[in-house]
Length: 410
Image (cartoon, rainbow, N blue to C red):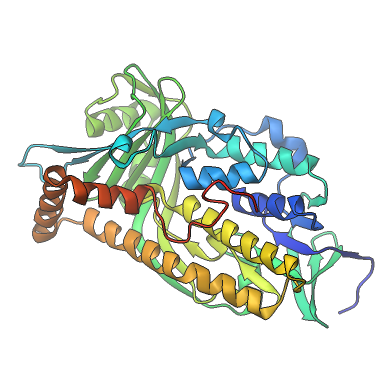
């Protein structure tokens, strides 16, 4: 490979989404020279249109974001103080609501729901002002090689960056993962998620409501004021039909589907839709390479685990590397990369397997499974310790809760 001007840094991150920016800010805050590649044009930050996509961040994830420099992250969204699940999978049987309150496990709230764009822009602006952090935007990673103990990465403008470690935070179609030769396990669900924001006449009382239909779940998640985000999962063919409707026809079907539980509502943002699948990288590391977030795993939005899982990747890798630096180790030391991979293995296996199992349990019309689902929720309503265990595991996880997740410093 022939190189022109070569820029050197300590860590190169491919992907400036929420996970990539958070990781870069943490590492730059440690005094390391960090470079991030992303196709987003900084000049367009303030003109980007709001979308229907939001992120429900649990308290431990908020702590990681705070450690990256956004001390007031909760001011960007609305608290999630309760969750209500309504089973509507049996048309001949009455609805069965089941409430899960955060105070039942000693919390003021499970977390906060924040518009994706709002959080992304806040982190991007923080990165622009951060010492030791350089953004290559709008740019893309074109290729990279590993030569003489370093990664040599070529960008779309032919810039070459040399670093001991390349972190892939470049999404489900990760080029970093592909070039590293890391294989994936992939499973399509035959479903699509539709997202949009609504304004409504009744207060949501900081309660997220999730309807369970045999075709897939439909969730209403609180935002500031009388506004909520919607994540509606349907079979892909049906989602395409709904997406093609006029706004008024779509809104009427949505109102019928939810029973106007939040009163009269209207769409605040255009409808967005994408197919759902499971993707799991068979490895998280290769020589001089580490994967985080959707470059490592993609799961269904049910139970809102995706970004929370990604931020635990971010925190784990940041903590492992910080400890290595303090011990005088190279950032690409194989022992550090093995430690990161081992540390994330149990959390990823249980969470990905759990979400996949929940998708199969909720999104089907098999009578025995519907009976089992209803019986399980009834049992939790009657047995508080069982309910507390389910909430603790699903909404306040304790696996791989390092110092950042617990509110500590890197």
